[in-house]
Amino acid sequence: MKHKRLAAAVLLAAALTATAVPTATARPADPVQQQLDLLVEEDGVPGALAYSSAGKATWTAGVADLGSGRSMVDANGRFRLASNTKAFTATAVMRLVADGRIRLDDRAGRYVPQLADRTITIRQLLKQTSGLTEYSTLVDWTRPGTPEEYLALALGKAPDFEPGTDWGYSNTNYLVLGMVIDKTSGVGFRDYIERTILRPLHLDDTYWPAPGELTLRGPHARNYGVHPANPQGGRVDLTELPGYEFGASGGLVSTPKDLNKFWDGLFGGRLLPGWALRLMTRDASDVGGRDTYPAGSRYGYGVASIPLSCGGVYWGHGGDLPGNSVAGGRATAGRGTVTVYSTTWTAQGQSLRHLQGAVDAALCAGERG
Image 1 (cartoon, helix red, strand yellow):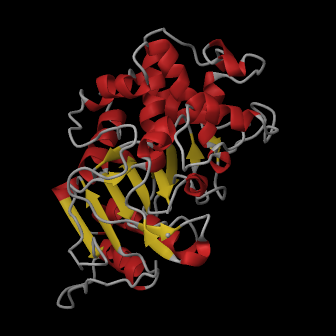
Image 2 (cartoon, rainbow, N blue to C red):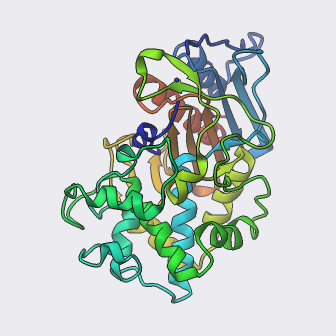
Protein backbone atom coordinates (compact mmCIF):
# COMPACT_ATOMS: atom_id res chain seq x y z
CA MET A 1 0.00 0.00 0.00
CA LYS A 2 0.96 3.69 -0.05
CA HIS A 3 2.62 5.17 2.62
CA LYS A 4 1.87 6.86 5.84
CA ARG A 5 4.80 9.26 5.77
CA LEU A 6 3.04 11.55 3.31
CA ALA A 7 0.45 11.88 6.05
CA ALA A 8 2.88 13.89 8.15
CA ALA A 9 3.05 16.35 5.31
CA VAL A 10 -0.55 17.41 5.19
CA LEU A 11 -2.92 19.76 7.02
CA LEU A 12 -5.68 18.04 8.88
CA ALA A 13 -7.85 16.67 12.40
CA ALA A 14 -12.60 16.34 15.36
CA ALA A 15 -14.17 13.72 17.32
CA LEU A 16 -15.80 11.22 15.10
CA THR A 17 -18.69 8.87 15.55
CA ALA A 18 -19.00 6.12 12.95
CA THR A 19 -22.33 4.99 11.61
CA ALA A 20 -22.58 1.49 10.25
CA VAL A 21 -24.81 0.27 7.48
CA PRO A 22 -26.34 -3.02 8.69
CA THR A 23 -25.87 -6.03 6.49
CA ALA A 24 -28.73 -8.25 5.45
CA THR A 25 -29.42 -11.22 7.72
CA ALA A 26 -31.56 -13.19 5.33
CA ARG A 27 -28.60 -14.45 3.30
CA PRO A 28 -25.00 -15.47 4.03
CA ALA A 29 -22.79 -12.53 4.91
CA ASP A 30 -20.86 -11.07 1.99
CA PRO A 31 -17.13 -11.23 2.86
CA VAL A 32 -16.40 -7.86 1.23
CA GLN A 33 -19.26 -6.19 3.09
CA GLN A 34 -18.06 -7.80 6.32
CA GLN A 35 -14.63 -6.19 5.98
CA LEU A 36 -16.10 -2.76 5.19
CA ASP A 37 -18.49 -3.04 8.14
CA LEU A 38 -15.56 -3.91 10.41
CA LEU A 39 -13.75 -0.77 9.23
CA VAL A 40 -16.77 1.29 10.28
CA GLU A 41 -18.01 -0.57 13.36
CA GLU A 42 -14.68 -1.56 14.95
CA ASP A 43 -12.15 0.87 13.53
CA GLY A 44 -14.16 4.10 13.62
CA VAL A 45 -13.91 4.79 9.89
CA PRO A 46 -16.63 7.25 8.79
CA GLY A 47 -17.20 5.64 5.39
CA ALA A 48 -15.72 2.94 3.18
CA LEU A 49 -16.27 1.72 -0.38
CA ALA A 50 -15.17 -1.18 -2.55
CA TYR A 51 -15.67 -1.33 -6.31
CA SER A 52 -14.93 -4.40 -8.40
CA SER A 53 -14.80 -4.27 -12.17
CA ALA A 54 -16.04 -7.87 -12.25
CA GLY A 55 -19.80 -7.49 -12.48
CA LYS A 56 -19.47 -3.77 -11.76
CA ALA A 57 -20.13 -4.54 -8.08
CA THR A 58 -20.08 -1.79 -5.44
CA TRP A 59 -20.12 -2.20 -1.65
CA THR A 60 -20.39 0.65 0.86
CA ALA A 61 -20.47 1.10 4.62
CA GLY A 62 -20.88 4.13 6.84
CA VAL A 63 -21.63 7.62 5.59
CA ALA A 64 -20.10 10.20 3.27
CA ASP A 65 -20.58 13.08 5.69
CA LEU A 66 -20.66 12.82 9.47
CA GLY A 67 -22.49 16.12 9.78
CA SER A 68 -25.43 15.34 7.53
CA GLY A 69 -25.38 11.54 7.59
CA ARG A 70 -25.44 11.54 3.79
CA SER A 71 -25.11 8.09 2.24
CA MET A 72 -21.67 6.96 1.16
CA VAL A 73 -20.86 7.91 -2.42
CA ASP A 74 -20.76 5.34 -5.20
CA ALA A 75 -17.93 4.30 -7.54
CA ASN A 76 -18.17 7.64 -9.37
CA GLY A 77 -17.19 9.61 -6.26
CA ARG A 78 -13.90 11.51 -6.37
CA PHE A 79 -11.10 10.81 -3.90
CA ARG A 80 -7.40 11.58 -3.59
CA LEU A 81 -5.22 8.82 -5.00
CA ALA A 82 -2.32 9.71 -2.70
CA SER A 83 0.55 7.34 -3.52
CA ASN A 84 -1.38 5.43 -6.17
CA THR A 85 -0.17 8.41 -8.21
CA LYS A 86 3.27 6.80 -8.21
CA ALA A 87 2.05 4.05 -10.55
CA PHE A 88 1.00 6.72 -13.09
CA THR A 89 4.36 8.47 -12.74
CA ALA A 90 6.30 5.20 -13.11
CA THR A 91 4.26 4.31 -16.20
CA ALA A 92 5.06 7.70 -17.73
CA VAL A 93 8.78 7.17 -17.05
CA MET A 94 8.63 3.77 -18.71
CA ARG A 95 6.92 5.34 -21.71
CA LEU A 96 9.91 7.66 -22.04
CA VAL A 97 12.24 4.65 -21.70
CA ALA A 98 10.29 2.77 -24.38
CA ASP A 99 10.57 5.79 -26.66
CA GLY A 100 14.35 5.93 -26.18
CA ARG A 101 14.29 9.33 -24.49
CA ILE A 102 15.83 8.11 -21.23
CA ARG A 103 17.50 4.93 -20.01
CA LEU A 104 16.87 3.14 -16.75
CA ASP A 105 20.55 3.20 -15.79
CA ASP A 106 21.03 6.88 -16.58
CA ARG A 107 22.08 8.86 -13.57
CA ALA A 108 19.27 11.07 -12.34
CA GLY A 109 21.74 13.95 -12.14
CA ARG A 110 21.79 14.02 -15.93
CA TYR A 111 18.28 15.49 -15.78
CA VAL A 112 18.14 17.01 -12.28
CA PRO A 113 21.17 19.26 -11.58
CA GLN A 114 20.70 19.03 -7.81
CA LEU A 115 21.69 15.36 -8.06
CA ALA A 116 24.73 15.90 -10.30
CA ASP A 117 27.13 14.60 -7.64
CA ARG A 118 25.06 11.52 -6.78
CA THR A 119 25.25 8.07 -8.37
CA ILE A 120 21.47 7.55 -8.14
CA THR A 121 19.89 6.08 -11.28
CA ILE A 122 16.41 6.28 -12.77
CA ARG A 123 15.94 2.58 -12.00
CA GLN A 124 16.78 3.12 -8.32
CA LEU A 125 14.26 5.96 -8.07
CA LEU A 126 11.53 3.77 -9.56
CA LYS A 127 12.35 0.86 -7.24
CA GLN A 128 12.68 2.98 -4.06
CA THR A 129 16.32 1.92 -3.68
CA SER A 130 18.01 5.32 -4.03
CA GLY A 131 18.45 6.00 -0.32
CA LEU A 132 17.06 9.53 -0.64
CA THR A 133 15.45 10.48 2.67
CA GLU A 134 11.80 11.50 2.97
CA TYR A 135 11.16 15.13 2.06
CA SER A 136 7.51 15.44 3.07
CA THR A 137 8.18 15.45 6.81
CA LEU A 138 10.50 18.43 6.34
CA VAL A 139 8.11 20.68 4.39
CA ASP A 140 6.18 23.65 5.75
CA TRP A 141 2.86 22.77 4.14
CA THR A 142 1.29 26.09 5.08
CA ARG A 143 2.95 27.72 2.08
CA PRO A 144 3.50 26.57 -1.52
CA GLY A 145 6.95 25.43 -2.58
CA THR A 146 8.72 24.18 -5.67
CA PRO A 147 10.02 20.65 -6.34
CA GLU A 148 13.55 22.09 -6.25
CA GLU A 149 12.93 23.52 -2.79
CA TYR A 150 11.44 20.26 -1.55
CA LEU A 151 14.34 18.25 -2.95
CA ALA A 152 16.82 20.62 -1.30
CA LEU A 153 15.26 19.77 2.06
CA ALA A 154 15.87 16.06 1.51
CA LEU A 155 19.39 16.61 0.21
CA GLY A 156 20.17 18.57 3.35
CA LYS A 157 19.84 15.33 5.31
CA ALA A 158 22.10 12.30 5.18
CA PRO A 159 20.81 9.54 2.86
CA ASP A 160 19.10 6.60 4.49
CA PHE A 161 21.54 4.21 2.77
CA GLU A 162 23.88 4.09 -0.19
CA PRO A 163 22.12 3.86 -3.57
CA GLY A 164 21.21 0.31 -4.54
CA THR A 165 22.12 -1.27 -1.20
CA ASP A 166 18.66 -1.41 0.41
CA TRP A 167 14.98 -0.61 -0.09
CA GLY A 168 13.26 2.30 1.62
CA TYR A 169 9.96 3.94 0.71
CA SER A 170 10.46 7.65 0.13
CA ASN A 171 8.22 10.13 -1.65
CA THR A 172 11.41 11.95 -2.64
CA ASN A 173 12.10 9.29 -5.29
CA TYR A 174 8.91 10.19 -7.15
CA LEU A 175 9.35 13.91 -6.57
CA VAL A 176 12.59 13.52 -8.54
CA LEU A 177 10.97 11.35 -11.23
CA GLY A 178 8.45 14.13 -11.79
CA MET A 179 11.38 16.48 -12.38
CA VAL A 180 12.91 13.96 -14.81
CA ILE A 181 9.66 13.85 -16.79
CA ASP A 182 9.56 17.66 -16.79
CA LYS A 183 13.04 17.78 -18.32
CA THR A 184 12.67 15.02 -20.90
CA SER A 185 9.05 15.45 -22.03
CA GLY A 186 9.22 19.20 -22.53
CA VAL A 187 5.64 19.61 -21.33
CA GLY A 188 5.79 18.91 -17.57
CA PHE A 189 4.84 15.69 -15.82
CA ARG A 190 1.16 16.63 -15.34
CA ASP A 191 0.58 17.31 -19.03
CA TYR A 192 2.66 14.32 -20.09
CA ILE A 193 0.69 11.92 -17.86
CA GLU A 194 -2.56 13.41 -19.10
CA ARG A 195 -1.51 12.95 -22.74
CA THR A 196 -0.05 9.45 -22.45
CA ILE A 197 -2.30 7.86 -19.80
CA LEU A 198 -5.45 9.76 -18.86
CA ARG A 199 -6.65 10.59 -22.37
CA PRO A 200 -5.82 7.24 -24.06
CA LEU A 201 -7.67 5.34 -21.31
CA HIS A 202 -10.53 7.89 -21.20
CA LEU A 203 -10.04 8.54 -17.50
CA ASP A 204 -12.37 11.50 -17.69
CA ASP A 205 -12.92 11.80 -13.94
CA THR A 206 -9.20 11.81 -13.08
CA TYR A 207 -7.37 15.12 -12.79
CA TRP A 208 -4.48 17.06 -11.32
CA PRO A 209 -5.60 19.75 -8.85
CA ALA A 210 -4.75 23.29 -9.90
CA PRO A 211 -2.34 25.44 -7.86
CA GLY A 212 -4.10 26.58 -4.71
CA GLU A 213 -7.08 24.26 -5.27
CA LEU A 214 -8.08 22.70 -1.96
CA THR A 215 -11.50 21.19 -2.65
CA LEU A 216 -12.49 18.05 -4.55
CA ARG A 217 -14.46 18.52 -7.75
CA GLY A 218 -17.72 16.67 -8.33
CA PRO A 219 -19.36 14.14 -5.98
CA HIS A 220 -17.20 13.02 -3.07
CA ALA A 221 -17.23 11.91 0.53
CA ARG A 222 -15.81 14.07 3.31
CA ASN A 223 -12.47 13.01 4.80
CA TYR A 224 -11.48 13.05 8.45
CA GLY A 225 -8.21 12.71 10.34
CA VAL A 226 -5.79 14.01 12.95
CA HIS A 227 -3.59 17.02 12.26
CA PRO A 228 0.01 15.90 12.91
CA ALA A 229 0.81 19.36 14.24
CA ASN A 230 -2.22 19.34 16.56
CA PRO A 231 -2.97 15.74 17.55
CA GLN A 232 -4.54 16.86 20.80
CA GLY A 233 -7.31 18.48 18.77
CA GLY A 234 -8.73 15.09 17.81
CA ARG A 235 -10.14 14.38 14.39
CA VAL A 236 -11.31 17.12 12.08
CA ASP A 237 -12.56 17.42 8.53
CA LEU A 238 -9.59 17.08 6.17
CA THR A 239 -11.38 17.18 2.84
CA GLU A 240 -9.64 20.38 1.79
CA LEU A 241 -5.94 19.78 1.18
CA PRO A 242 -3.25 21.37 -1.04
CA GLY A 243 -3.35 18.57 -3.59
CA TYR A 244 -1.28 20.38 -6.21
CA GLU A 245 1.67 20.34 -3.81
CA PHE A 246 1.65 16.54 -3.57
CA GLY A 247 2.85 16.43 -7.18
CA ALA A 248 4.17 13.34 -8.94
CA SER A 249 4.32 11.31 -5.75
CA GLY A 250 0.72 11.77 -4.63
CA GLY A 251 -1.29 14.50 -6.33
CA LEU A 252 -3.89 12.84 -8.59
CA VAL A 253 -7.63 12.81 -7.88
CA SER A 254 -9.75 10.04 -9.39
CA THR A 255 -12.71 7.68 -8.86
CA PRO A 256 -12.82 3.94 -8.13
CA LYS A 257 -14.07 3.31 -11.68
CA ASP A 258 -11.25 5.30 -13.24
CA LEU A 259 -8.57 3.77 -11.03
CA ASN A 260 -9.72 0.28 -11.98
CA LYS A 261 -9.64 1.30 -15.65
CA PHE A 262 -6.04 2.43 -15.16
CA TRP A 263 -4.97 -0.91 -13.63
CA ASP A 264 -6.72 -2.80 -16.42
CA GLY A 265 -5.15 -0.56 -19.06
CA LEU A 266 -1.65 -0.84 -17.63
CA PHE A 267 -1.60 -4.58 -16.94
CA GLY A 268 -3.67 -5.29 -20.03
CA GLY A 269 -0.86 -3.93 -22.20
CA ARG A 270 -2.56 -0.77 -23.51
CA LEU A 271 0.05 1.72 -22.22
CA LEU A 272 3.46 0.07 -22.63
CA PRO A 273 5.17 -2.56 -24.74
CA GLY A 274 5.33 -6.00 -23.13
CA TRP A 275 9.03 -5.85 -22.25
CA ALA A 276 8.56 -2.56 -20.38
CA LEU A 277 5.64 -3.89 -18.37
CA ARG A 278 7.58 -7.05 -17.53
CA LEU A 279 10.44 -4.94 -16.18
CA MET A 280 8.04 -3.01 -13.95
CA THR A 281 6.89 -6.20 -12.26
CA ARG A 282 9.85 -8.59 -12.48
CA ASP A 283 12.65 -6.27 -11.40
CA ALA A 284 11.20 -6.16 -7.90
CA SER A 285 12.36 -6.15 -4.28
CA ASP A 286 11.05 -8.32 -1.46
CA VAL A 287 9.27 -5.87 0.86
CA GLY A 288 7.18 -8.26 2.95
CA GLY A 289 6.80 -6.98 6.49
CA ARG A 290 8.07 -3.49 5.62
CA ASP A 291 6.00 -0.33 5.59
CA THR A 292 2.41 -1.48 4.99
CA TYR A 293 3.27 -4.59 2.98
CA PRO A 294 2.29 -8.09 4.20
CA ALA A 295 4.59 -11.09 3.94
CA GLY A 296 5.34 -12.14 0.38
CA SER A 297 4.91 -8.67 -1.14
CA ARG A 298 7.26 -7.31 -3.78
CA TYR A 299 7.84 -3.75 -5.01
CA GLY A 300 8.74 -3.11 -8.63
CA TYR A 301 8.63 0.17 -10.57
CA GLY A 302 5.86 2.12 -8.87
CA VAL A 303 3.73 -1.01 -8.49
CA ALA A 304 3.66 -3.73 -5.85
CA SER A 305 2.38 -7.30 -5.68
CA ILE A 306 0.42 -8.57 -2.68
CA PRO A 307 -0.37 -12.28 -2.16
CA LEU A 308 -4.01 -13.38 -2.25
CA SER A 309 -5.48 -15.91 0.17
CA CYS A 310 -6.91 -17.86 -2.80
CA GLY A 311 -3.53 -18.08 -4.51
CA GLY A 312 -1.62 -15.80 -6.84
CA VAL A 313 -1.20 -12.09 -6.26
CA TYR A 314 -2.64 -8.75 -7.22
CA TRP A 315 -0.55 -5.94 -8.65
CA GLY A 316 -1.29 -2.35 -7.76
CA HIS A 317 -0.21 0.25 -5.25
CA GLY A 318 -1.83 1.95 -2.31
CA GLY A 319 -2.16 5.41 -0.90
CA ASP A 320 -2.51 7.05 2.48
CA LEU A 321 -3.23 10.58 3.59
CA PRO A 322 -4.47 11.61 7.03
CA GLY A 323 -7.95 11.78 5.51
CA ASN A 324 -8.11 8.60 3.45
CA SER A 325 -6.49 5.29 2.56
CA VAL A 326 -6.67 3.37 -0.72
CA ALA A 327 -5.81 -0.22 -1.64
CA GLY A 328 -6.35 -2.48 -4.60
CA GLY A 329 -5.18 -3.42 -8.06
CA ARG A 330 -5.52 -6.13 -10.68
CA ALA A 331 -5.28 -9.82 -9.81
CA THR A 332 -3.33 -12.35 -11.83
CA ALA A 333 -5.11 -15.01 -13.89
CA GLY A 334 -7.82 -12.59 -14.96
CA ARG A 335 -9.59 -12.58 -11.60
CA GLY A 336 -10.58 -8.94 -11.71
CA THR A 337 -9.69 -5.47 -10.54
CA VAL A 338 -10.79 -3.76 -7.34
CA THR A 339 -10.40 -0.45 -5.54
CA VAL A 340 -11.15 -0.10 -1.82
CA TYR A 341 -10.91 3.17 0.05
CA SER A 342 -11.74 4.60 3.46
CA THR A 343 -12.49 8.17 4.46
CA THR A 344 -9.80 8.32 7.11
CA TRP A 345 -6.26 6.99 7.50
CA THR A 346 -6.24 3.19 7.95
CA ALA A 347 -2.62 2.29 7.30
CA GLN A 348 -1.74 0.14 10.29
CA GLY A 349 -2.93 -2.56 12.63
CA GLN A 350 -6.46 -3.92 12.51
CA SER A 351 -7.80 -1.24 10.18
CA LEU A 352 -5.10 -2.03 7.61
CA ARG A 353 -5.98 -5.73 7.81
CA HIS A 354 -9.64 -4.91 7.21
CA LEU A 355 -8.83 -2.62 4.27
CA GLN A 356 -6.59 -5.19 2.63
CA GLY A 357 -9.05 -7.92 3.63
CA ALA A 358 -11.76 -6.23 1.57
CA VAL A 359 -9.46 -6.25 -1.46
CA ASP A 360 -8.65 -9.91 -0.95
CA ALA A 361 -12.31 -10.86 -0.49
CA ALA A 362 -13.37 -9.05 -3.66
CA LEU A 363 -10.60 -10.57 -5.81
CA CYS A 364 -11.07 -14.07 -4.37
CA ALA A 365 -14.88 -14.04 -4.59
CA GLY A 366 -14.95 -16.13 -7.75
CA GLU A 367 -12.63 -18.74 -6.27
CA ARG A 368 -14.92 -19.25 -3.27
CA GLY A 369 -18.26 -18.84 -4.98
